[in-house]
Length: 397
Image (cartoon, rainbow, N blue to C red; front, side):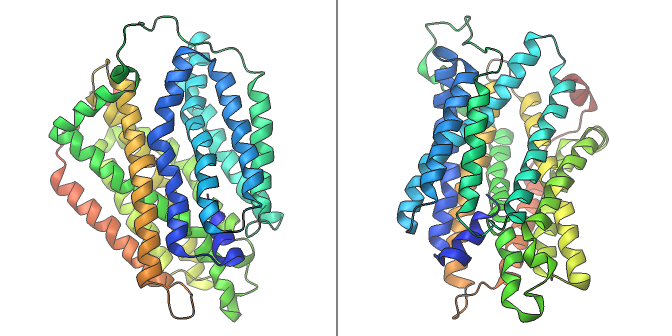
């Protein structure tokens, strides 16, 4: 996710619009696959087995992806890879919840310390890819493929998580697919929340798509060609994930003190800072400080929205559709939001912010993204009405 832009633009020299299309495969898969794999896991196959199968197939496709030599074929192969990978996010959560509840653990208390290792794994993957010299090569796909296969095989050793036995055979397909949650769009506040979730999901894709490519492109400027930032751009970007692990600890305080709306607004303005600081960042001096601060701000921008948004859904929906409502939240952010951010930014950059020499106009690009995030924040502050009730936070615990 982080280094593929470097591979795409520097190694292959392919276009921005096609890159946006490739990143949209994440969104397409997020719309279609989690619901389908949820039905399979609920009806026919153990969670841990389905999880293992998905990762093994994903890993094999990554090996093939490394051989692809044209952007059109790359799109379709990546789409196949994402169809197998994206469902594993929800499946891994389901496995964790199932096993924790089975052994009488407190999910709210005991799941976050487990989940944080996913972010640590993200950091390790970025460091390995950078330090082995593979951030701009097809080697990154082999690295991902090997670990996907290892995880897939390991999954079969996990405790059994069979399909639940209490699912009614008379359940409608709309209930099993979670389509009942779409009725939430009839509620003005919930509809507004989901629309803004989509817009922020788009912002997340912008930083994932272009952050590492932006830092690596400083090698085109002679005075920065051999700088630490250029050589270890992926490691610099990993500061964002390190920050993410730290801001998780601050979320309970902020939610209790300020409420969901203000926390989400903090997240939105953090996105403005994330992009704005990048616009004036450079590999040395004050510019480097701005880049590092931007990466630190990312932790607040990402965590405060995702966790507070999930909490808002949890406290605003009935028990009957709560799970499917959470799925709808993810569909709007990782699905439609990802597609919006990927396709529109790819087209915008290629048409308006790539100069005659083929170089990207990074300062203008980041300023446009910052303005976008600012507009979203201002509109959310004006349009979204929600009264802070501290007892809602207590109810979650």
